[in-house]
Length: 280
View: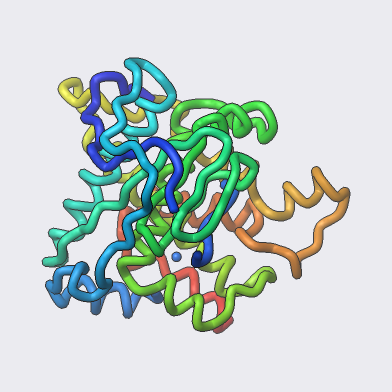
């Protein structure tokens, strides 16, 4: 993935934030509800309510040139560009999330977390929390190297923000965030994978010599490899020596690859109804 020279997001903080529930730690409305929302043309701010700001953060963080932090900031900007365009196509306004780049531990509006929690999205303050050292873990522990594998992780967390804007997160909370192979929680995670694929679809469509951010040969395979590497069944087999479907929280490797690929190949947000599997 070529990314140096890309636009940097302004929605970045560095430091601790300041409970609720985490969404997508460690690493999304049914389509009918999603489309109804997009077609209303209402400002999401009117539907969602005020943001809860977290104290003790350093805002407008400037990442060093060529650093992993700068990579995360540029990828976030690319998600802003794509989702701004998609929301406008449906007559809606995209409310951009913020990203908090932290070191070792952080306090969010959803509670305390550490690097061991992995990247997560907190709907209470609409922020993505990321310790960029996770990208090393993605490469070394999970065997998923490459910049685009890391970009997939960020795009997945942005997918959770999309779900929040659509009201999907609240619906799943009302259902109960139980685990299991076809639980609402798993479907939420798989939909976030789908949205990450949609994002990749449109990033690739923008490939041109004049665009500093370009998907290159092997990038999609790197993202698919990352999705495969962090499936519940594969992780359970590696850590426990057995697979326990009732303890699934994010979906199998096959499911994660399938939904990312579907989003990437179609670029059609209407086809991301992972929740239809609940009725099957």
